[in-house]
Length: 347
Image (cartoon, one colour):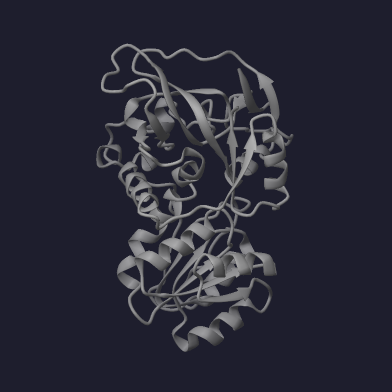
């Protein structure tokens, strides 16, 4: 079968022929109907060879959807042909966090060698993929897999990031979204639906700022050296109640710390270059500011996100590519030329 794989670090991915997998005990084989390309993939592709964390070659794609093609021994309750989405942050299933549905924070994953698809295990950028356990599958029902598959990360991650801040985002408050890309434009939709807060969106081009307005932002501000001043002109002395940084580079994080107000939240969602750090200290930011760096989300939250999509609340902007054209999707992802999310669809 065909698969898009990372073969060596700091090199473009390759479209290769690999063996079709067979499900072992407890596993599920999916015929892939859609796979999302993510900036996390680009981050992995650019990691240095020294200390590279994953086995190579590795099939990319941690956003996956498919239909059940076969099941291994011991798997019950799944019918062939059932349309499903893959819950990506696999854990052990039994530790303190996993038992609460928070497999994204599994305390034993590293110890047991458990890794998500596309981030250690073979991912969804292929004609078929193996899922380690049926609990990591969520029924899609009548949702279109192409439009739904980005929700497994680009929907789940901002939803998980926003939920803890919801009690603060009451009438008269302000939420700032930095970066109107694959995750950021979904974050704006979620904030608009879940809160009465005024939403200010930041990005570097007029096209992205127009995109932010289309997705529900009340105000837009150019992300440049004057961004903090211009946001403060809107929020006044109170500052922003919450700032969601969907970029995660040092300049955007510094800007977030300059925009947030007393008792506000700064939420680092974007992975950036992996080294950005918030400057926190008694005289560094307003009093009682909380800084969080959430990761992915819980399985039950994925179900909630898919229900929001089913209700028409979330509409991910998608650019569709065939598997044969998947390398172009990754090129455009790296060049920041996508409007929303790239989805690869095996023919």
